[in-house]
Image: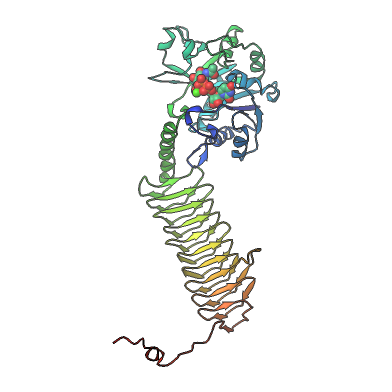
Length: 454
Ligand code: UD1
Ligand code: CA
Protein backbone atom coordinates (compact mmCIF):
# COMPACT_ATOMS: atom_id res chain seq x y z
CA UNK A 1 0.00 0.00 0.00
CA UNK A 2 1.36 3.41 -0.99
CA UNK A 3 0.28 6.70 0.55
CA UNK A 4 1.29 9.99 -1.05
CA UNK A 5 1.88 13.31 0.70
CA UNK A 6 2.60 16.42 -1.32
CA UNK A 7 3.71 19.51 0.59
CA UNK A 8 2.21 22.64 -0.87
CA UNK A 9 1.40 24.93 2.05
CA UNK A 10 4.14 27.47 1.44
CA UNK A 11 3.58 30.89 -0.01
CA UNK A 12 6.47 31.11 -2.41
CA UNK A 13 7.36 34.69 -1.50
CA UNK A 14 10.03 34.95 -4.17
CA UNK A 15 7.49 34.40 -6.93
CA UNK A 16 6.19 37.92 -6.11
CA UNK A 17 2.67 36.76 -6.79
CA UNK A 18 -0.84 37.14 -5.41
CA UNK A 19 -1.32 33.44 -6.09
CA UNK A 20 0.23 30.48 -4.31
CA UNK A 21 3.35 29.17 -5.98
CA UNK A 22 2.13 25.70 -6.90
CA UNK A 23 -0.70 26.97 -9.11
CA UNK A 24 1.70 28.73 -11.46
CA UNK A 25 1.77 26.94 -14.77
CA UNK A 26 4.52 25.12 -16.59
CA UNK A 27 3.89 23.45 -19.95
CA UNK A 28 0.33 24.72 -19.78
CA UNK A 29 -0.47 23.11 -16.43
CA UNK A 30 -0.20 24.06 -12.74
CA UNK A 31 2.97 22.79 -11.06
CA UNK A 32 1.10 20.82 -8.42
CA UNK A 33 -0.82 18.97 -11.13
CA UNK A 34 2.46 17.83 -12.65
CA UNK A 35 3.50 16.34 -9.32
CA UNK A 36 0.12 14.62 -9.01
CA UNK A 37 0.64 13.16 -12.50
CA UNK A 38 3.99 11.72 -11.41
CA UNK A 39 2.63 10.17 -8.24
CA UNK A 40 -0.30 8.68 -10.14
CA UNK A 41 2.15 6.93 -12.45
CA UNK A 42 3.24 4.78 -9.52
CA UNK A 43 -0.39 3.82 -8.79
CA UNK A 44 -0.65 5.82 -5.62
CA UNK A 45 -4.35 6.05 -4.89
CA UNK A 46 -4.27 7.76 -1.51
CA UNK A 47 -2.92 11.24 -2.29
CA UNK A 48 -2.83 13.88 0.44
CA UNK A 49 -1.97 17.47 -0.32
CA UNK A 50 -0.90 19.79 2.46
CA UNK A 51 -2.25 23.26 1.80
CA UNK A 52 -1.98 26.53 3.70
CA UNK A 53 -1.33 29.75 1.82
CA UNK A 54 -3.99 30.41 -0.81
CA UNK A 55 -5.62 27.08 0.01
CA UNK A 56 -8.86 27.73 -1.87
CA UNK A 57 -6.98 28.69 -5.01
CA UNK A 58 -4.81 25.59 -4.73
CA UNK A 59 -7.87 23.37 -4.25
CA UNK A 60 -9.56 24.84 -7.29
CA UNK A 61 -6.49 24.30 -9.43
CA UNK A 62 -6.43 20.53 -8.84
CA UNK A 63 -8.67 18.49 -11.12
CA UNK A 64 -7.83 15.06 -9.72
CA UNK A 65 -9.47 13.32 -6.79
CA UNK A 66 -7.16 13.99 -3.85
CA UNK A 67 -7.44 14.68 -0.12
CA UNK A 68 -6.55 18.18 1.02
CA UNK A 69 -5.10 18.62 4.50
CA UNK A 70 -4.86 22.12 5.93
CA UNK A 71 -1.70 23.24 7.70
CA UNK A 72 -2.67 26.55 9.23
CA UNK A 73 0.78 27.69 10.24
CA UNK A 74 3.83 26.59 8.32
CA UNK A 75 5.95 25.30 11.17
CA UNK A 76 8.26 23.25 8.97
CA UNK A 77 8.30 20.25 6.66
CA UNK A 78 8.03 17.84 9.61
CA UNK A 79 4.97 19.66 10.91
CA UNK A 80 3.43 19.53 7.43
CA UNK A 81 3.61 15.73 7.51
CA UNK A 82 2.37 15.64 11.14
CA UNK A 83 -0.91 17.27 10.12
CA UNK A 84 -1.44 14.31 7.76
CA UNK A 85 -1.03 11.75 10.51
CA UNK A 86 -4.67 10.64 10.55
CA UNK A 87 -4.48 9.86 6.83
CA UNK A 88 -1.35 7.75 7.12
CA UNK A 89 -2.25 4.08 7.55
CA UNK A 90 -0.27 1.72 9.79
CA UNK A 91 1.00 -0.30 6.86
CA UNK A 92 2.81 0.17 3.58
CA UNK A 93 4.98 3.09 2.59
CA UNK A 94 4.58 6.83 2.37
CA UNK A 95 5.96 8.81 -0.55
CA UNK A 96 6.62 12.43 0.38
CA UNK A 97 6.98 15.04 -2.35
CA UNK A 98 6.89 18.80 -2.87
CA UNK A 99 4.32 20.57 -4.99
CA UNK A 100 6.86 22.82 -6.70
CA UNK A 101 8.98 20.24 -8.56
CA UNK A 102 7.10 19.84 -11.84
CA UNK A 103 9.93 18.07 -13.68
CA UNK A 104 9.85 14.98 -11.46
CA UNK A 105 9.02 11.85 -13.47
CA UNK A 106 6.87 8.90 -12.44
CA UNK A 107 9.63 6.75 -13.88
CA UNK A 108 12.04 8.03 -11.24
CA UNK A 109 9.56 7.44 -8.43
CA UNK A 110 9.18 3.90 -9.72
CA UNK A 111 12.94 3.37 -9.49
CA UNK A 112 12.91 4.80 -5.97
CA UNK A 113 10.13 2.38 -5.00
CA UNK A 114 11.97 -0.61 -6.44
CA UNK A 115 15.24 0.33 -4.77
CA UNK A 116 13.49 0.90 -1.46
CA UNK A 117 11.89 -2.53 -1.47
CA UNK A 118 14.99 -4.35 -2.79
CA UNK A 119 17.08 -2.79 -0.02
CA UNK A 120 14.30 -3.34 2.51
CA UNK A 121 14.89 0.19 3.78
CA UNK A 122 12.81 1.94 6.39
CA UNK A 123 13.51 5.22 4.65
CA UNK A 124 15.08 5.97 1.31
CA UNK A 125 15.99 9.59 0.64
CA UNK A 126 16.12 10.71 -2.98
CA UNK A 127 19.36 12.65 -3.27
CA UNK A 128 21.42 14.41 -5.92
CA UNK A 129 25.01 15.45 -6.45
CA UNK A 130 25.25 19.20 -6.89
CA UNK A 131 28.36 21.22 -7.72
CA UNK A 132 26.76 24.10 -5.90
CA UNK A 133 24.81 22.62 -2.99
CA UNK A 134 24.05 26.03 -1.43
CA UNK A 135 20.74 26.19 0.37
CA UNK A 136 20.04 22.48 0.39
CA UNK A 137 20.12 20.01 3.24
CA UNK A 138 23.36 17.99 3.13
CA UNK A 139 23.46 14.20 3.19
CA UNK A 140 25.87 13.18 5.94
CA UNK A 141 27.36 9.69 5.54
CA UNK A 142 30.05 7.73 7.37
CA UNK A 143 33.34 6.64 5.76
CA UNK A 144 31.63 3.51 4.42
CA UNK A 145 28.94 5.52 2.72
CA UNK A 146 26.21 4.70 5.23
CA UNK A 147 23.64 7.43 5.70
CA UNK A 148 23.78 9.06 9.12
CA UNK A 149 21.62 12.16 8.96
CA UNK A 150 20.58 15.23 7.01
CA UNK A 151 21.86 18.63 8.06
CA UNK A 152 20.29 21.88 6.85
CA UNK A 153 22.53 24.54 5.32
CA UNK A 154 21.82 26.87 8.24
CA UNK A 155 22.73 24.21 10.81
CA UNK A 156 25.74 22.69 9.02
CA UNK A 157 29.29 22.85 10.38
CA UNK A 158 32.30 23.73 8.22
CA UNK A 159 32.86 20.15 7.18
CA UNK A 160 29.24 19.39 6.43
CA UNK A 161 28.87 22.50 4.31
CA UNK A 162 31.39 21.04 1.84
CA UNK A 163 29.20 17.97 1.16
CA UNK A 164 27.98 17.85 -2.44
CA UNK A 165 25.24 15.25 -1.98
CA UNK A 166 22.00 17.07 -1.21
CA UNK A 167 18.52 16.18 -0.01
CA UNK A 168 15.90 16.53 -2.74
CA UNK A 169 13.14 16.59 -0.13
CA UNK A 170 11.62 13.46 -1.63
CA UNK A 171 11.43 10.40 0.58
CA UNK A 172 9.92 6.97 0.72
CA UNK A 173 9.29 5.90 4.31
CA UNK A 174 7.73 2.94 6.05
CA UNK A 175 4.34 4.23 7.19
CA UNK A 176 4.38 2.85 10.70
CA UNK A 177 7.91 4.04 11.42
CA UNK A 178 7.10 7.46 9.98
CA UNK A 179 4.15 7.84 12.34
CA UNK A 180 6.32 6.88 15.30
CA UNK A 181 9.22 9.15 14.41
CA UNK A 182 6.97 12.15 13.74
CA UNK A 183 6.13 12.07 17.46
CA UNK A 184 9.80 12.51 18.27
CA UNK A 185 10.43 15.62 16.16
CA UNK A 186 11.23 18.91 17.85
CA UNK A 187 11.96 22.41 16.61
CA UNK A 188 15.28 22.95 18.38
CA UNK A 189 17.28 24.22 15.41
CA UNK A 190 18.38 27.48 13.86
CA UNK A 191 15.01 28.04 12.16
CA UNK A 192 12.79 26.83 15.03
CA UNK A 193 11.02 24.55 12.58
CA UNK A 194 9.98 20.93 12.77
CA UNK A 195 12.39 19.45 10.24
CA UNK A 196 11.16 16.36 8.45
CA UNK A 197 14.80 15.62 7.71
CA UNK A 198 15.34 14.75 11.39
CA UNK A 199 13.45 11.48 10.98
CA UNK A 200 16.54 10.11 9.21
CA UNK A 201 18.63 10.38 12.35
CA UNK A 202 15.74 9.19 14.51
CA UNK A 203 15.42 6.01 12.45
CA UNK A 204 19.21 5.56 12.40
CA UNK A 205 19.26 5.70 16.21
CA UNK A 206 16.67 2.97 16.24
CA UNK A 207 18.93 0.78 14.10
CA UNK A 208 16.54 0.87 11.20
CA UNK A 209 17.95 0.34 7.71
CA UNK A 210 18.14 3.72 6.01
CA UNK A 211 19.56 4.71 2.64
CA UNK A 212 19.78 7.09 -0.27
CA UNK A 213 18.96 6.80 -3.92
CA UNK A 214 20.89 9.22 -6.14
CA UNK A 215 18.86 10.69 -8.96
CA UNK A 216 20.27 10.43 -12.49
CA UNK A 217 18.88 13.69 -13.87
CA UNK A 218 19.25 16.55 -11.41
CA UNK A 219 16.74 18.61 -13.37
CA UNK A 220 13.92 16.44 -12.08
CA UNK A 221 14.19 17.80 -8.56
CA UNK A 222 14.52 21.45 -9.53
CA UNK A 223 12.17 23.40 -7.32
CA UNK A 224 10.64 26.59 -8.62
CA UNK A 225 11.06 29.54 -6.29
CA UNK A 226 11.08 32.49 -8.68
CA UNK A 227 9.80 33.55 -12.08
CA UNK A 228 13.27 33.02 -13.47
CA UNK A 229 13.27 29.41 -12.31
CA UNK A 230 9.77 29.02 -13.70
CA UNK A 231 11.14 29.91 -17.13
CA UNK A 232 14.12 27.59 -16.70
CA UNK A 233 11.82 24.71 -15.87
CA UNK A 234 9.56 25.66 -18.77
CA UNK A 235 12.48 25.40 -21.17
CA UNK A 236 13.53 21.99 -19.92
CA UNK A 237 9.93 20.84 -20.23
CA UNK A 238 9.72 22.18 -23.74
CA UNK A 239 12.70 20.13 -24.82
CA UNK A 240 11.19 17.00 -23.27
CA UNK A 241 7.83 17.58 -24.95
CA UNK A 242 9.38 18.36 -28.34
CA UNK A 243 11.57 15.24 -28.12
CA UNK A 244 8.57 13.05 -27.37
CA UNK A 245 6.58 14.34 -30.35
CA UNK A 246 9.51 14.26 -32.74
CA UNK A 247 10.18 10.65 -31.75
CA UNK A 248 6.55 9.96 -32.65
CA UNK A 249 7.03 11.42 -36.13
CA UNK A 250 5.81 14.97 -35.69
CA UNK A 251 7.62 17.84 -37.42
CA UNK A 252 8.09 20.98 -35.34
CA UNK A 253 9.55 23.81 -37.38
CA UNK A 254 11.06 25.94 -34.64
CA UNK A 255 11.15 26.79 -30.97
CA UNK A 256 8.37 29.38 -31.17
CA UNK A 257 5.93 26.46 -30.98
CA UNK A 258 4.34 25.86 -27.55
CA UNK A 259 2.88 22.45 -26.76
CA UNK A 260 1.26 21.57 -23.43
CA UNK A 261 2.24 18.44 -21.54
CA UNK A 262 -0.92 16.43 -22.20
CA UNK A 263 -1.29 17.23 -25.88
CA UNK A 264 -1.25 14.25 -28.26
CA UNK A 265 -0.15 14.61 -31.88
CA UNK A 266 -0.24 12.03 -34.68
CA UNK A 267 2.43 11.01 -37.15
CA UNK A 268 3.42 13.27 -40.06
CA UNK A 269 1.64 16.25 -38.64
CA UNK A 270 3.58 19.48 -39.11
CA UNK A 271 3.48 22.15 -36.42
CA UNK A 272 4.49 25.54 -37.80
CA UNK A 273 5.85 28.71 -36.22
CA UNK A 274 3.81 30.27 -33.45
CA UNK A 275 1.44 27.38 -32.80
CA UNK A 276 0.21 27.28 -29.19
CA UNK A 277 -1.47 23.98 -28.38
CA UNK A 278 -2.56 23.22 -24.81
CA UNK A 279 -4.99 21.35 -22.56
CA UNK A 280 -6.21 17.93 -23.53
CA UNK A 281 -5.91 18.61 -27.23
CA UNK A 282 -5.57 15.62 -29.53
CA UNK A 283 -4.29 16.22 -33.05
CA UNK A 284 -4.39 13.45 -35.63
CA UNK A 285 -2.07 12.37 -38.43
CA UNK A 286 -0.99 14.44 -41.44
CA UNK A 287 -2.31 17.76 -40.17
CA UNK A 288 -0.81 21.19 -40.70
CA UNK A 289 -1.13 23.35 -37.62
CA UNK A 290 0.04 26.93 -37.85
CA UNK A 291 1.52 29.30 -38.40
CA UNK A 292 0.13 31.26 -35.47
CA UNK A 293 -2.60 29.11 -33.99
CA UNK A 294 -4.14 28.72 -30.58
CA UNK A 295 -5.68 25.33 -29.93
CA UNK A 296 -7.06 24.51 -26.48
CA UNK A 297 -8.77 21.29 -25.35
CA UNK A 298 -9.76 20.41 -28.87
CA UNK A 299 -9.85 17.33 -31.05
CA UNK A 300 -8.47 17.71 -34.53
CA UNK A 301 -8.70 14.54 -36.63
CA UNK A 302 -6.54 13.59 -39.66
CA UNK A 303 -5.47 15.63 -42.69
CA UNK A 304 -6.79 18.84 -41.17
CA UNK A 305 -5.28 22.27 -41.74
CA UNK A 306 -5.61 24.94 -39.09
CA UNK A 307 -3.89 28.14 -40.16
CA UNK A 308 -3.62 31.42 -38.22
CA UNK A 309 -6.70 30.43 -36.22
CA UNK A 310 -8.09 29.80 -32.77
CA UNK A 311 -9.87 26.58 -31.77
CA UNK A 312 -11.20 26.24 -28.22
CA UNK A 313 -13.04 23.24 -26.73
CA UNK A 314 -14.09 22.11 -30.18
CA UNK A 315 -13.75 19.28 -32.70
CA UNK A 316 -12.68 19.28 -36.33
CA UNK A 317 -13.09 16.12 -38.40
CA UNK A 318 -10.91 14.74 -41.21
CA UNK A 319 -9.77 16.79 -44.20
CA UNK A 320 -11.29 20.08 -43.07
CA UNK A 321 -9.58 23.42 -43.51
CA UNK A 322 -9.79 26.08 -40.85
CA UNK A 323 -8.61 29.65 -41.38
CA UNK A 324 -6.76 31.77 -41.92
CA UNK A 325 -8.16 33.92 -39.13
CA UNK A 326 -11.05 31.67 -38.10
CA UNK A 327 -12.29 31.51 -34.52
CA UNK A 328 -13.90 28.30 -33.31
CA UNK A 329 -15.36 28.96 -29.89
CA UNK A 330 -16.42 26.29 -27.38
CA UNK A 331 -18.61 23.40 -28.38
CA UNK A 332 -18.23 23.72 -32.12
CA UNK A 333 -18.21 20.51 -34.09
CA UNK A 334 -16.91 20.73 -37.61
CA UNK A 335 -17.50 17.72 -39.87
CA UNK A 336 -15.36 16.17 -42.59
CA UNK A 337 -14.10 18.12 -45.55
CA UNK A 338 -15.51 21.40 -44.29
CA UNK A 339 -14.11 24.82 -45.05
CA UNK A 340 -14.23 27.47 -42.34
CA UNK A 341 -12.52 30.43 -43.97
CA UNK A 342 -11.17 33.82 -43.07
CA UNK A 343 -12.83 35.90 -40.36
CA UNK A 344 -15.47 33.28 -39.62
CA UNK A 345 -16.54 32.84 -36.00
CA UNK A 346 -18.31 29.65 -34.99
CA UNK A 347 -19.77 29.12 -31.52
CA UNK A 348 -21.71 26.17 -30.08
CA UNK A 349 -22.59 24.97 -33.55
CA UNK A 350 -22.45 21.94 -35.78
CA UNK A 351 -21.22 22.20 -39.34
CA UNK A 352 -21.94 19.09 -41.42
CA UNK A 353 -19.66 17.25 -43.84
CA UNK A 354 -18.76 19.03 -47.05
CA UNK A 355 -20.18 22.40 -46.02
CA UNK A 356 -18.47 25.73 -46.61
CA UNK A 357 -18.46 28.92 -44.60
CA UNK A 358 -15.77 30.65 -46.53
CA UNK A 359 -15.67 34.27 -45.43
CA UNK A 360 -16.67 36.83 -42.81
CA UNK A 361 -19.56 35.05 -41.07
CA UNK A 362 -20.89 34.47 -37.58
CA UNK A 363 -22.33 31.02 -36.92
CA UNK A 364 -23.70 31.00 -33.35
CA UNK A 365 -25.94 28.30 -31.86
CA UNK A 366 -26.50 26.82 -35.29
CA UNK A 367 -26.83 23.47 -36.97
CA UNK A 368 -25.60 23.38 -40.52
CA UNK A 369 -26.26 20.17 -42.46
CA UNK A 370 -24.19 18.55 -45.19
CA UNK A 371 -22.97 20.28 -48.34
CA UNK A 372 -24.38 23.62 -47.31
CA UNK A 373 -22.93 26.84 -48.68
CA UNK A 374 -22.96 29.83 -46.38
CA UNK A 375 -22.10 32.91 -48.42
CA UNK A 376 -19.83 35.76 -47.42
CA UNK A 377 -20.93 37.86 -44.48
CA UNK A 378 -23.84 35.74 -43.23
CA UNK A 379 -24.87 36.31 -39.63
CA UNK A 380 -26.75 33.85 -37.45
CA UNK A 381 -28.73 36.31 -35.32
CA UNK A 382 -28.85 34.10 -32.27
CA UNK A 383 -29.49 36.58 -29.48
CA UNK A 384 -32.62 38.65 -28.92
CA UNK A 385 -31.27 40.45 -25.88
CA UNK A 386 -32.54 37.80 -23.50
CA UNK A 387 -32.26 34.31 -24.98
CA UNK A 388 -29.98 32.51 -27.35
CA UNK A 389 -31.88 30.73 -30.11
CA UNK A 390 -30.93 28.13 -32.66
CA UNK A 391 -30.68 28.39 -36.41
CA UNK A 392 -30.99 25.23 -38.46
CA UNK A 393 -29.78 25.06 -42.05
CA UNK A 394 -30.46 21.65 -43.55
CA UNK A 395 -28.52 19.63 -46.14
CA UNK A 396 -27.67 21.17 -49.53
CA UNK A 397 -29.12 24.58 -48.64
CA UNK A 398 -27.54 27.76 -50.00
CA UNK A 399 -27.49 30.97 -48.00
CA UNK A 400 -26.63 34.02 -50.12
CA UNK A 401 -24.12 36.66 -49.08
CA UNK A 402 -24.79 39.17 -46.37
CA UNK A 403 -27.95 37.49 -45.08
CA UNK A 404 -29.23 37.53 -41.51
CA UNK A 405 -30.88 34.38 -40.22
CA UNK A 406 -32.89 35.52 -37.21
CA UNK A 407 -33.19 32.62 -34.76
CA UNK A 408 -35.13 30.54 -34.03
CA UNK A 409 -35.40 29.78 -37.70
CA UNK A 410 -34.99 26.85 -40.09
CA UNK A 411 -33.85 26.71 -43.70
CA UNK A 412 -34.96 23.37 -45.08
CA UNK A 413 -33.15 21.00 -47.44
CA UNK A 414 -32.15 22.33 -50.86
CA UNK A 415 -33.60 25.78 -50.09
CA UNK A 416 -31.96 29.03 -51.23
CA UNK A 417 -31.78 32.36 -49.45
CA UNK A 418 -31.24 35.35 -51.72
CA UNK A 419 -28.27 37.57 -50.97
CA UNK A 420 -28.98 40.37 -48.54
CA UNK A 421 -32.07 38.74 -47.01
CA UNK A 422 -33.15 38.98 -43.41
CA UNK A 423 -34.86 35.67 -42.76
CA UNK A 424 -37.27 35.45 -39.85
CA UNK A 425 -39.47 32.55 -40.94
CA UNK A 426 -39.01 28.99 -42.13
CA UNK A 427 -37.76 28.58 -45.70
CA UNK A 428 -39.39 25.42 -47.07
CA UNK A 429 -37.62 22.58 -48.81
CA UNK A 430 -36.42 23.61 -52.27
CA UNK A 431 -37.78 27.20 -52.03
CA UNK A 432 -36.00 30.48 -52.74
CA UNK A 433 -36.56 33.07 -50.03
CA UNK A 434 -36.03 36.72 -50.86
CA UNK A 435 -36.47 38.94 -47.85
CA UNK A 436 -35.38 42.41 -48.86
CA UNK A 437 -36.66 45.45 -50.74
CA UNK A 438 -36.88 45.07 -54.48
CA UNK A 439 -34.50 47.40 -56.30
CA UNK A 440 -35.92 50.71 -57.54
CA UNK A 441 -34.00 52.76 -60.16
CA UNK A 442 -34.78 56.51 -60.20
CA UNK A 443 -33.75 57.40 -63.74
CA UNK A 444 -31.78 60.65 -64.35
CA UNK A 445 -31.84 61.34 -60.62
CA UNK A 446 -28.23 62.51 -60.54
CA UNK A 447 -28.69 65.06 -63.33
CA UNK A 448 -31.98 66.37 -61.87
CA UNK A 449 -30.27 66.96 -58.53
CA UNK A 450 -27.47 68.87 -60.26
CA UNK A 451 -24.89 66.36 -59.08
CA UNK A 452 -23.48 65.38 -62.45
CA UNK A 453 -19.72 65.95 -62.56
CA UNK A 454 -18.57 68.15 -65.45
C1 UD1 B 1 13.86 21.38 2.45
C2 UD1 B 1 14.67 20.34 3.22
C3 UD1 B 1 16.08 20.32 2.67
C4 UD1 B 1 16.06 20.02 1.18
C5 UD1 B 1 15.16 21.02 0.46
C6 UD1 B 1 14.99 20.60 -0.98
C7 UD1 B 1 13.76 20.30 5.48
C8 UD1 B 1 13.95 20.72 6.87
N1 UD1 B 1 14.69 20.70 4.62
O1 UD1 B 1 14.44 22.63 2.73
O2 UD1 B 1 16.87 19.34 3.33
O3 UD1 B 1 17.36 20.07 0.65
O4 UD1 B 1 13.86 21.06 1.07
O5 UD1 B 1 14.27 21.59 -1.65
O6 UD1 B 1 12.82 19.60 5.18
N2 UD1 B 1 6.24 23.29 3.34
C9 UD1 B 1 4.98 23.13 3.87
N3 UD1 B 1 4.78 23.42 5.16
C10 UD1 B 1 5.77 23.86 5.97
C11 UD1 B 1 7.05 24.03 5.43
C12 UD1 B 1 7.26 23.73 4.10
O7 UD1 B 1 4.05 22.73 3.17
O8 UD1 B 1 5.50 24.10 7.14
C13 UD1 B 1 6.46 22.99 1.92
C14 UD1 B 1 6.83 24.23 1.14
O9 UD1 B 1 5.68 24.81 0.55
C15 UD1 B 1 7.77 23.69 0.08
C16 UD1 B 1 8.39 22.46 0.74
O10 UD1 B 1 7.56 22.13 1.81
O11 UD1 B 1 7.10 23.25 -1.07
C17 UD1 B 1 9.80 22.68 1.17
O12 UD1 B 1 9.82 23.68 2.14
P1 UD1 B 1 11.01 24.73 2.24
O13 UD1 B 1 10.77 25.61 3.39
O14 UD1 B 1 11.28 25.33 0.92
O15 UD1 B 1 12.23 23.75 2.61
P2 UD1 B 1 13.74 24.06 2.41
O16 UD1 B 1 14.17 25.01 3.42
O17 UD1 B 1 14.01 24.39 1.00
CA1 CA C 1 12.89 25.09 -0.90
